[in-house]
View 1 (spheres, rainbow over the protein chains, first blue to last red):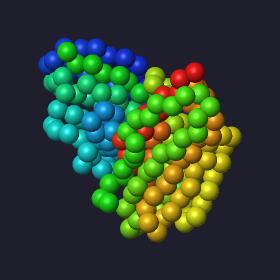
View 2 (cartoon, chains in turn red, green; view 1 turned 90 degrees about the vertical axis):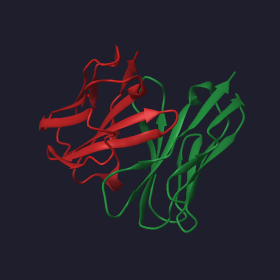
View 3 (cartoon, helix red, strand yellow; view 1 turned 60 degrees about the horizontal axis):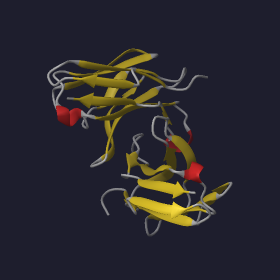
Length: 115
Length: 112
């Protein structure tokens, strides 16, 4: 298996632009998670899906952030409009329904820089 | 303790030194503790998952222990090598949800 795939790996954009991050989970995994990694706050959970349905989006910072999972093999995280404080590494992770002790499998992340 | 806390925040050791880090967590509703290793530009990689008080796990030169009663876990690296340089992330999950609660990580730099 190719593991969790994220694209793009790096994104540099200007403040006010729309940014879309993409994730393909491991085939057969029922849960998908979006995280944000910053030096100040560490790894924060933004939202997670179960069978394509958003379960907990309490970590989404504000209305500028939105996430969708139109099917079992694809999810997007969109920021519109982007701001410099959104600069971070965004990780996607997935896990199977019967995962061992909630273990998650991570993608390589998207490093976002908003100028 | 309300959240997962890791110390130290960063560590710089010489090749061959042994080192250890700490992860502290709320002991209420504890289900499992995970250690991940993250190298920049790569996927965080699972090292260990532990669930029982007194658990000890070992993988090569890296080992971990778990104390669920007092809410802490130690990660040990024996004879550090430059390739051990990474951020080590600790996370816990409770028995009431599927999300992982992460600490801020310990950034380890091993120089030759």
